[in-house]
Amino acid sequence: MNKKFYKDLNIKSMSENELELALNEIIIGIKKPDLVSAEGMQRRLDTKIKPIRSLGVLEDIAVQLAGIQHTVHPEIKGKGVLLMAGDHGVVKEGVSAAPQEVTAQLFYSYLSGGGGINVLTKHADAKLICNDIGISTLIDPPELMVNRIKNGTDNIAEGPAMTRREALQSLLTGAKIASDAIESGINILAAGEVGIGNTTPSSALITVFTGCCVEEATGSGTGLKNDALENKYEIIKRAIKVNNPDPNNPIDTLAKIGGLEIAAMVGAIIEAAYQNVPTIIDGIISSAAALVAAKLNPLAIEFMITSHSSEEKGELIALKYMGLKPRLFLNMRLGEGTGAALMFNMVEAAIKIADEMDTFETSGVTTVN
Image (cartoon, rainbow, N blue to C red; front, side, top):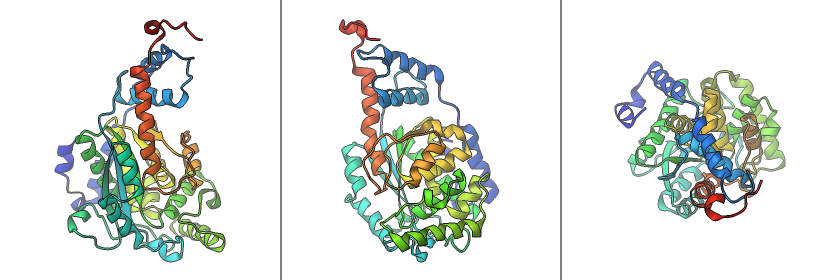
């Protein structure tokens, strides 16, 4: 879908059926990356003054980008971190060591440039695009709430996080945010988020979609230990039992045990894939969103670039389920898209190898097999 389509689309006033039709157009429009371009990039890399495939992940990324951009000479024109914000009703169950008001406070810090993600996006010469999808309290000025779907999710331990219509609205809002970023000249995205309590729905989604047990998918979040962590396990189990999500129906599952900002990340990932733009995946929340995107259309996986191995263990389960592996091992669990932002430099390095490294023919170096 193009910018004009989204400009003419009033997501908040659309019926559930209209939202479904618009979302399906994106989902079915995702096409497989170009194998010819990917193979051509590998041939380019194989001529460089190095043993075959000796640059490992850098070569993998260069080949992936070539396929995504449908050219043996891919380039990064603009980088952007899409940071989605949302609150979670399940926080009242004691699943987070931080109070809910911290979400809005952190959101303001990103807008003023003081967050960890601000530092790392600046370091990568990338743009940070902050979006309130579902913060629970009013924020000022009101224009910051233009993309808000509702004031936080409902408590998943008691019932659905949101209605199916709200989930669809969040998905399309995320898609529109991604489309606007791409229209502005950005051609590689990173998925970031903020939302106190959001490791709980993320772990729930990973549990349902992969079939693992709750304890395998669930970490300490903001620092829970002992009895508090055990309580988090029980709350996630209760949420799954109460809502009975259908793992074969991604939107049903997302609406029942997901989050508004998670849904927006899903929408951004699938829209980027639809427009032949890669998305760098961050930690557990980003990986949970990626997992939902993969359930909507498995081809979306081919447009995902993994970054760091989060301390939140559910991320590795989600990535493994999609056939992916992390590339950076930094013992991070901040969220915000910080790990993904660090990956921008790796992606650019991959392209520079293809574009700037000498070949055996031009350098006079004896061929290495």
